[in-house]
Amino acid sequence: MRYCTKCKKLYKGDETEKCFVCGKKTISDPSHYSPVNVVTANGFELERIRAALHDADIPYSYQEARRDTGIQILNSAPPENCDVFVPLSAYEKTMNVLIGIGAVKEEISQADTEKLREAEKAAEDEELPPEKARRIRILSGIAFILLLVLVVWLVDIGFEFVKSLFVK
Image (tube, rainbow, N blue to C red; front, side, top):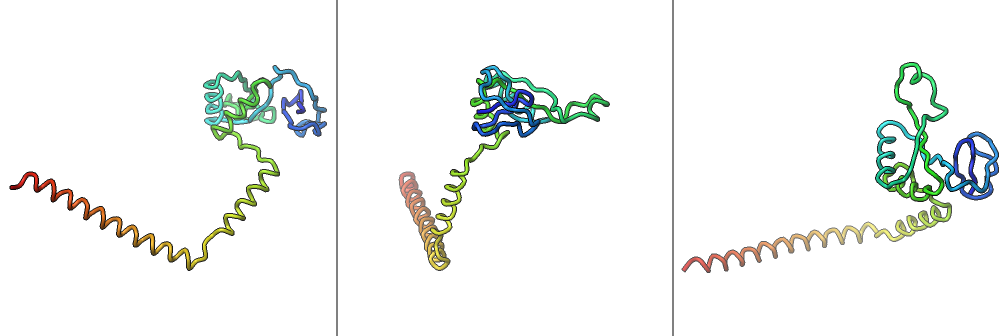
């Protein structure tokens, strides 16, 4: 795991020598207390993320994204985008929470992507031929109608029985 001390970004794997955002050299052993930038959000999404982290008892902080400057400074508007930071020790728990609320998409590995494609292809291969699917639909429709007739017949018998109890 690599870490950029300037951008506070975390990179999986040890092959990333430089940060993709700022170009600074990454380090391999960050402290458990190092702040990690987990997501950039604004408005309602930021409030939703803050509430989820608060509910999960995850310490966090946020600040205006460095790339967002300009008009909000002039008119005191809230920042458009804020970076959310958590300690490295809470990173895994934070990612689970963010994936759970849909704020971050789960990263899918290349192997998982290949397995997903193979499963989709197998499902396509298992599709029924049109003639067989039509027969199954017709038989299902007939079975449904017969089931309805059976239910109506049983209800009718039940009412006749109840009526016979009260009428002499």
